Image (cartoon, rainbow, N blue to C red):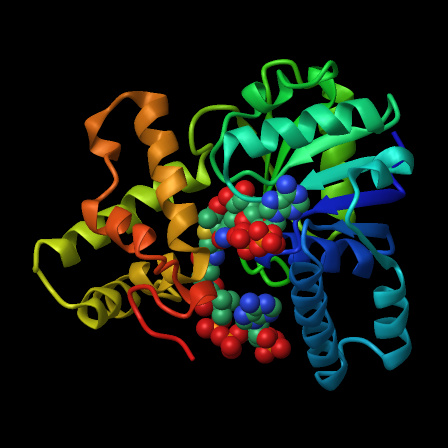
Length: 283
Ligand SMILES: CC(=O)CC(=O)SCCNC(=O)CCNC(=O)[C@H](O)C(C)(C)COP(=O)(O)OP(=O)(O)OC[C@H]1O[C@@H](n2cnc3c(N)ncnc32)[C@H](O)[C@@H]1OP(=O)(O)O
Ligand SMILES: NC(=O)C1=CN([C@@H]2O[C@H](COP(=O)(O)OP(=O)(O)OC[C@H]3O[C@@H](n4cnc5c(N)ncnc54)[C@H](OP(=O)(O)O)[C@@H]3O)[C@@H](O)[C@H]2O)C=CC1
């Protein structure tokens, strides 16, 4: 399977980063969102990241211009009619993802692979919204995408071997490291990471220590680059809550219950860095 043209759905922090690394690797990318302002915000971040690469001598002005030239805007899923791979990075919501995949199945050519960057939702259930479950796969990038090397590649129940192979080859072309994972709630990354973040939120909720203290313990004591509350703000508290709910529902085990403080913050619209306030305040 020869992948040349890609569509990325969602121009948020993940979709923008995925579009950037795909365009840098020479792929033509259609970047799709539902709102003009979300697309513009996503493109501005990509442009800033590429300018930094030029300043640091990692790419020339000409390469920056060519990379940006490979990204085109899209507000219509019909634009998937001539792509070889779709990478969906819209919000972490099963109904929205199933609707998008159902529509894509009708629009995209038969050979097109449909991948989701979901951080925890079952690939098998997303695939069941299509008539091509063998061509549906998880392609889970890490945040910030331009910096982090890992891509978890998740095989749904029906994912074909040649589809897995094509996505693994494509990941290598992006200079990322693919790791094969089976389809269980939270896969590997978030099954391990998110309960730690949730426990840090419980530690705050129960008054064991303040935000800065909890983060400092994990930064200085365990050499984590960011403390868990800072990382939760960076990921997005809405996304953290969705992931905990997926783990809780998927395993039916109370050890995955989301901390009430996490729910409260999300209900308040305190979503972390992207909304200007979470466990910390951002300008
Ligand atoms: C929720 C999920 O489903 C899965 C997930 O993604 S979980 C989250 C996984 N990610 C992590 O755990 C990230 C943990 N944090 C880190 O690794 C680091 O703090 C970090 C890489 C984000 C920043 O590193 P740092 O050394 O503290 O800061 P800083 O010196 O500013 O940045 C290092 C480099 O990364 C770049 N960088 C930092 N944030 C960036 C961003 N958001 N986008 C693009 N580049 C970024 C910087 O530009 C800098 O690059 P150069 O100096 O080489 O040009
Ligand atoms: N945040 C993280 O650290 C990580 C997140 N993920 C996963 O990546 C996905 C995206 O997360 P993230 O980038 O953080 O979220 P963001 O909220 O930053 O971005 C989501 C984007 O998708 C857009 N969008 C919403 N619905 C649609 C739709 N129907 N069609 C097209 N675009 C749509 C949103 O537009 P608008 O704002 O206008 O609503 C927004 O621009 C989620 O599945 C998440 O779980 C995976 C790895 C890490």
